[in-house]
Length: 66
Image 1 (cartoon, rainbow, N blue to C red):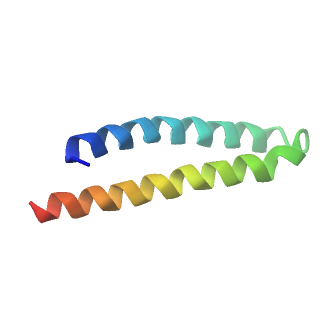
Image 2: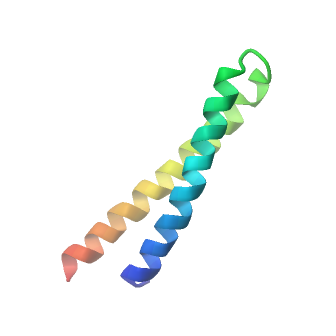
């Protein structure tokens, strides 16, 4: 994967992560309504941010290798 491809993937995931963060925030503000969705939304948000962190670390490694 090239640096440019990785940067594009990070941008797309960053957008999705921002949306997930807002969804989690909205759900938290509405508590206790829909509390049963909290763990699923939180887990999905965590996974997006974990993937984003992994991609950013990979990008940094590629940039440092140049």
